[in-house]
Image (cartoon, rainbow, N blue to C red; front, side, top):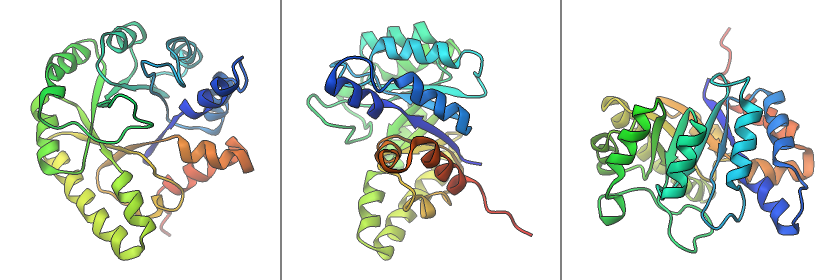
Length: 249
């Protein structure tokens, strides 16, 4: 079964929009655990606009008795503050994501260039402490080979292009999906695990769940958005059902 790691950033965004403590991120994490999700994802940004370092510490404490069965995945750019936090917490996985100043959400994967300088050292450092490292990349063969060369354990395929293609209709969705299939097959051939995330939802997952070698999807915005209307527990169970392989009789 494909593992679902729930990104709880949006719960913190709602809390921070008002100030104070409600809604509590830890309450959302507890609902996730009760529903049976396989992981919790957090992306603490430098501007603290949603998840804060203290949230990450509180979530790590909440998960202490469940790990590593339930994995903690810390996402972010390899700035000194994030590197120190990852060392302090020791998550099962760290997903390194390039950050563009002022961006609303992640908008591109890693590629060769100045911004990737030093990545190999960060990856080697995390791995030496038993932390699995995933690199956020576009579904491009060159980017996947680059992730392998840097020493990453997995790639997280950036799925917004697929989500936009899906909105254009079945033929566009399948053409886009084929690119991801090629990328996943290449990653597997190079010895990399395959994660995916960004704008995946209950509808487009009906196609994307068939991606070969897919280990994990990280989903946050779509889950929290739907939870406003039907409740978080209900939504989580819907996603888990979609990701569960169909039973053959």
